[in-house]
Image (cartoon, rainbow, N blue to C red; front, side, top):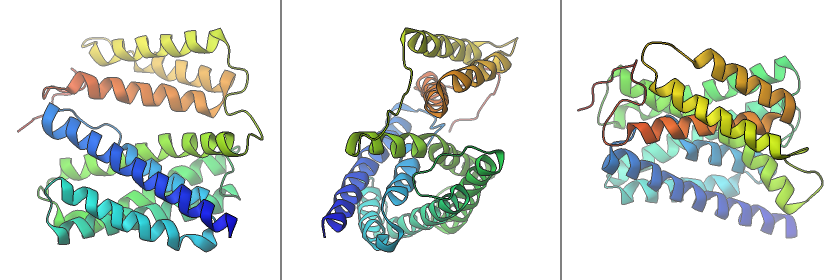
Amino acid sequence: MPRLRAHWRDSLFSAALWSVLALACLGLRDHLGGVLAVWLPSGVAVAAFRIVDRRHWHVPGAIFLLVQALTVMVTGVQPLAALAYSFSSLLQTLICAAISIRVLGGARAIPRRFAQVAGVFGAAIAGCLVGALVAIPFRAEQSLAEFGWWFFANVLGILIVTPALVDLRGFAFRRRRAVLPGIDLWFFAGLAASMVLGALALQTRTVTLMPLLMAAMVGMGVRYGQFAIVLVVLGYATLATMFSLGGATPVPFLPLARD
């Protein structure tokens, strides 16, 4: 019984976080003209199912189906379309969580071998592809570009946010191990330097600095682990969204038509 209550608690908290992030992201896109490089709520949903025991997946399943549909309806979407979006998101989440757990060998395990890294990436691709295809008939815009944004933003959201939340949840509730081992002043200096490099890479028109940013990401990962990579990528995506506010393209060397 205590474990079941914990599943309800985690599911309700995760669904509420999903709703808040979804409304915030849609507000950035619809009212401030931002480009959503990462759909953060998708990572929250997968993390919720990674945290809850598979025997009780009906708990987050029912909660997320309802909360997601209501959240989408708040933005002005018709009930039938909102329910379809919620179903596609739930299907995407279930596929990604199930495959990830299988390739990792555990719900809270982290990828340590190349096969596991590839498996987690494949899980995100498979789940998001199915979710995007199911949602196609209900989308207002049917262009290939819109499908691409929908698909890739969800993939990045799952790959970035899910492992971070799973680790943070384990640290907050069980305190068995530190999420960020060996954090020191150099970590924050490296993170700040990576953000400056990311900002320069996004604003440079003639010379690409992306290889340097990738090198910085690898260096942070080797020194501080997976969580450092998550922070660097999330920071880069945040910068891209900030630069796009007002309807601008997030990167000057990639012109995007904005209607």
